[in-house]
Length: 430
Image (cartoon, rainbow, N blue to C red; front, side):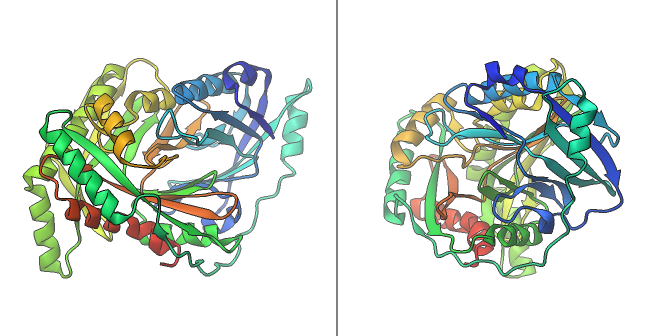
């Protein structure tokens, strides 16, 4: 394993040998993941799983995404790649997770695994990635070929984690919402996203794979991810780049599901016509368009927000799709759009200042970019929502936030965070 916190200068000296070959079948993927250090990205049963670690790039501070992008570009340009499948997620791949804030104590990371197992569009593959230090890349490839594809292991029961409020208890969260509403009323900003934290302790060493499996079973239409202890099921696509096409999904505006079919339909209709939620959503869409448009020759959005149905709630959603115009990589676009108004607020600078003053804890990688990038710079990145960070000592920190507007009601926002906590709390047996 190679690790560096000065990636831009260190990466060019490193050369990787990458070999991707088709295989007959790899389903299911999650039971093949490492139970203690899972690397995974999937949706509707398809995606990629990483095993082992060939190389790690760590960055921090204000230039964390830029530094990682520069290091990755150098590493990819120097790699010896033989990709015999040619699908998104084949060839050279790194899994990534980035801290939300430049001042965060959490490191940002790109991890290149030794093995990548993938499934997409009915096809399966395995990629072997190894360091090359000699004159013959085929020798390194031969060594990598000895890495065996793991067989799926039986499901284990989901571990039970008891969560309690973190540094900001519910009454203090409501007080923070009240203060945010006051500042919005005074014209300091239009919207700010305030989050809460729950903490617990994981007792079982191999509980993460069962937790991820439950997230995938319960929320199949989300991006289910596991990167360096950050696990979750995000419904929001930050940015996706695939051979010159760029897309994103913006979510802002939320309500709970109804108890029955009629009630559920009424809630969706009410959300789609709610002035507060529509205004919040419009700010998030405008922010995404503003950040992506300079990098595209064309960028289209859904004509109107649509209601996105998840098992526990409804979201207002807008899809963006366009054509890349400046050769940016997926990480370049991640740097351009993060943080979005959906997870920070607007105007961005004022929202980040108010968020830091009122929230009361370091978000770490919560609401930061999480996903993967390949050797061409293509990739899929989500916003790390409905997630928890599992530390090496077993501490589990879960997060959920709400967009605060001028007419926000503190008790309602608190209730919304409880809804958003539900996927990760239930995935840990709660």
